[in-house]
Image 1 (cartoon, helix red, strand yellow):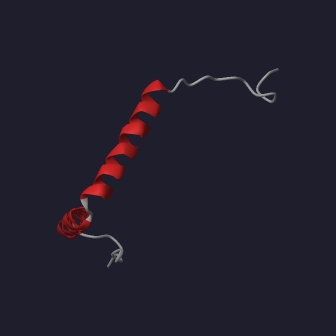
Image 2 (cartoon, helix red, strand yellow):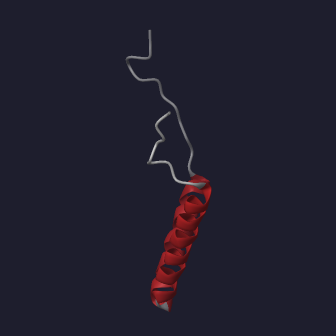
Length: 66
């Protein structure tokens, strides 16, 4: 009789935990006031602009040059 792994969750249990996590995030978001939401949105906009304007430049390091 093969041993079953007790750490593996069923698909229903995984879905339950995903839904619970989503609901917890929504509840936390609803607890924030308008000022906190505004500052969060501004931070996201600033990060988006920064990533949009970022340039990736590759320079070989000394151990890569032969």
